[in-house]
Image 1 (cartoon, helix red, strand yellow):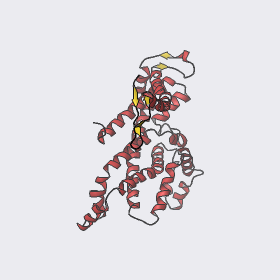
Image 2 (spheres, one colour; image 1 turned 180 degrees about the vertical axis):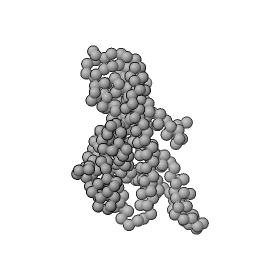
Image 3 (cartoon, helix red, strand yellow; image 1 turned 135 degrees about the horizontal axis):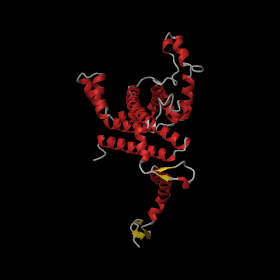
Image 4 (cartoon, helix red, strand yellow; image 1 turned 90 degrees about the horizontal axis):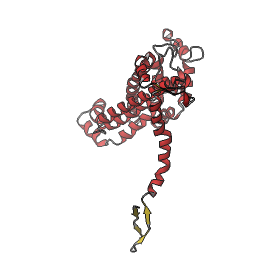
Length: 306
């Protein structure tokens, strides 16, 4: 059996700690490995296997092997294709908006404005709140009967813009995206603030001597030096927007008319609400492959993947 000799301790005396078997360090990793296998690896592998069956999710005796038929059905499933498209819209709009807004607020707060510490804490509060609570709150705010948005628009003379915000197929998804941006921008704002603090003040002082203004400082100093931070924020924002579920579940439940349907909600409805576990697993596998593809592109773009 391979064994490891542990180093000595003490001053001037070589007093050994003894010989430790090589498997002992693995014992410390065993709880985490078991947790990962039970709750991560095995479910992923099981989902992949189930995707080749027709199964209602109750009795294994009723599992019917159908090969890749579930994946073929996905190609003609209009709701699935719409959910995939909505995910793409969510990523493009959500990531771009939250990144720009978080960077803008971070730069403003780092300029030493009054009450900047107060606003930092205030903007971060939504990021630690429950997504369900935020979804219910915004649903009440936007309600045509109980909300405050439509009455406010009428009071300021913009009554023509009032509508059933979550009941309009054209605005339901953008409203959910804006809600998601409102919740998460404070978290990314702090990441940008940490990046801004690493930029030496001497660079700005030298630029001011050369006649550079605020906009020039941002374009030629702040933005180039924040590129690694921007890449991190984009990766995190894309992951969070891709896996969005609870916010849409609470606010629209994928409606109206599947206008705000996304892959995670479609997977849940098909697998657990309609008991088409095999078809739901196929959606989950496609979602996993999409996530891996996007992650690979991000790692390649940021130089992390050679």
